[in-house]
Image (cartoon, rainbow, N blue to C red):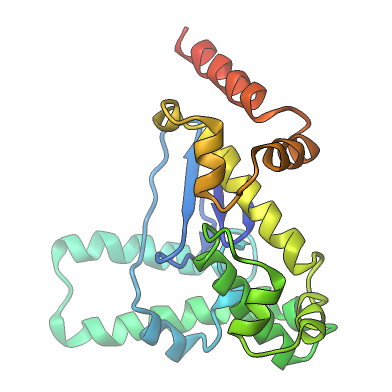
Length: 238
């Protein structure tokens, strides 16, 4: 069991679960115990042949008990074993396409409700706008108005796009920046970097604003949050 943070989603993964990730975007996975992950690397243009708009599904957990997830997982694990023994070249392309069709069908069935309550056009633009935000999250000039300019829509239409979700564009940007800062503050590898340096690296340009926003989301100051996680690490080593 481990925790995945990707594409604005935070998911707790269990054995047999599936999750779709965009490797071009920031992601983190943390497991308390040793875990084995099986990763299938699929070029974006090939994935889109099977799942035309994969963005809405990125970072969402597909539970092992949901729909076709279990047979897909079993097939992947079986293929891994067979690949060690050698899969006939003539069949490799056919098997790969069959597997991708199954994965796409899994997501289409499990998350068919994603677009309910919003037009397919708005849902697609919502996913692509979130992708744009993820790609530019470190840019301090990123704002709803700059996003609207980049995707060539009015500010009013941008609000309509985000109405398909549960947050405004500015709230989404702030939440994601705070999540990335929290991730690095709790990571021993970033212990040598100050909280301000981490905050500024994720697009904040005011230390007081960062501290207020962080406390509002996590209930403690960034410094206290880091100390709490350092204490947790020490307890695990004892």
